[in-house]
Amino acid sequence: MSNLEKTPFQLKFTAKSLHRQAKKAQKDENVEKIRLKRALQQGNNDGTRIYSTPRTQSERRLSRSTCSALRVS
Image (cartoon, rainbow, N blue to C red; front, top):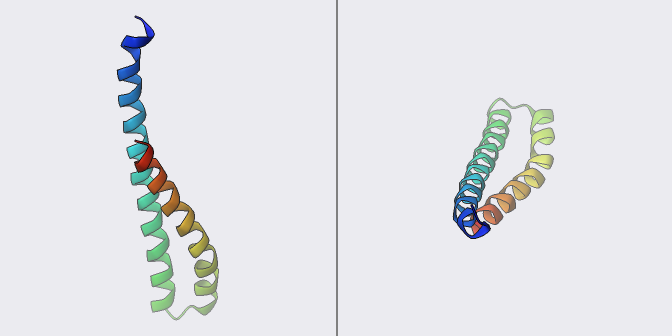
């Protein structure tokens, strides 16, 4: 098999992999939102502080990774 024949397969494989990564990042972002929401509903101020500060940073990171993975694919 020449490189020219392998290229379409590699591109399809990479696209599927990037879509999986984007889905996982979206799921992780939703989990972070749910944790914060639960802490707020339970009146857990310490938990809210813990989840809110890293949440915004991790949520931004996950959102960027989702967008970049979809853009590349």
